[in-house]
Image 1 (cartoon, one colour):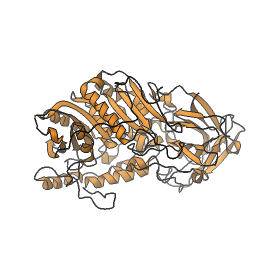
Image 2 (image 1 turned 180 degrees about the vertical axis):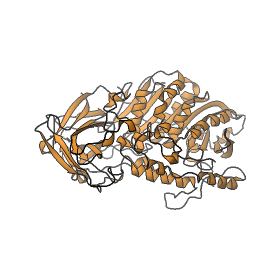
Image 3 (image 1 turned 120 degrees about the vertical axis):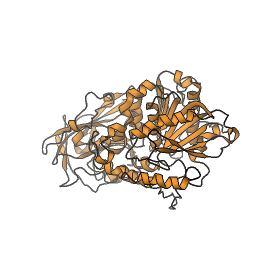
Image 4 (image 1 turned 60 degrees about the horizontal axis):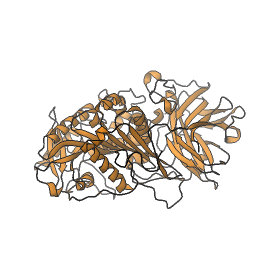
Length: 591
């Protein structure tokens, strides 16, 4: 373990907590062009180079970003992506993926195969330019981070590394159906928002309407209108999400594709064969990006630097409910960018490709310390806590019995949560949980006699009886301060239909896993007891002595998730106590 850095000072696996990269170059003019793909579809690309190196004969390494959020806005001389990298001496190519922005074609769903095949041809085009060294690093944030992942899947000789910031690894589990529960907020809000973008509609933060995406070439407006007519040929991706319950469901509006077809996790072997050096970022409080980053770390074998911090989506706003007010959490945004510049330089020089192994850097809440490891999970002791009588959380199971919960379909939660930030990159703040705990079944421990570090995946084991054949089950882990304020640490959920444990999962070391495939569906039998076992989102937190631990159980969260069942009487749930009753296993790092 390390407090701030892992490896030698020159290692690509180093993680710096302070400093900023020099920016000696000015940004030149943006050049827009169309590049024609194998099927005749034209993609809109912007090229930005340093003003001091504008001569086409000056060879430059290139940062490639393929986005579905517009490569630029009409009338603006640059974009924030070029602004971030050109001052360091790189050429930057930003493209609208097919069916978006000013590009032609259709965008029916995320990373359709035609979209990802385009990346090889864009890389070919870059290599052929007189200003190109033939070396490219893929970069991106959110959706654009996942396009960088799919660049690696193409195994192109020019691609020397990728830097995906806050991507999902499995879109079903990390974003749209965590635990199989329909994330209606993300599906509908994001799906309809990007459909508006593809119609050239955007409302800015101040409420004003954007003038639209940057056109291409001298005849740009006519070309743009033709591209927008292409975009209208498919509905919002939300229409497809409404038809999905299982990973292998194939909505008609997606042309027969399933979410398995656009999950980068499903091409893990291909990624390993490409051996593309990768630096990926995630947040403990950003949807399922931390879960995805840890699964990537376990599953993949290419050179890899993984960084998980106490962040919102994007890493600009830290959140540590256990740390005292006024404390600065490092690294700040300029230092994060400096880490990316250093990694990109190592990729361009070939140092990254020569590196062996992988490192995961993670922040521990409450302690305010960064640690580094070459293996996961860390050496933790599983400590079992039972949901006991009198709503206690205890090391002993106590007497047999049950607690009853009438599911309230109107029950919601705080809006500034881990899912909302994945949509708007806003702050995460769960506040004092007492207002929500009162409407749930909550089990609270006695005050801790010493500090307790929880690092890894908390596993929840529920023995339940329901009046319905399906339902959503939510579990929250909180730390209660001596004054009664309850702080959110993590949570997780499982739709009962998906309760069958996937014994052969490559991620079983993290706790019970589920396939979410139609063939493994197991509805509940009303009135009969059933076992539901699932993991919460990973976390690292040091809970101080004198605090109490609290586990809360619920059957709905209308703020974010669609209710299950969708009609009929809401379920009445019994959570059983005693030696065969409900409990959680906490991964404890011993002093």
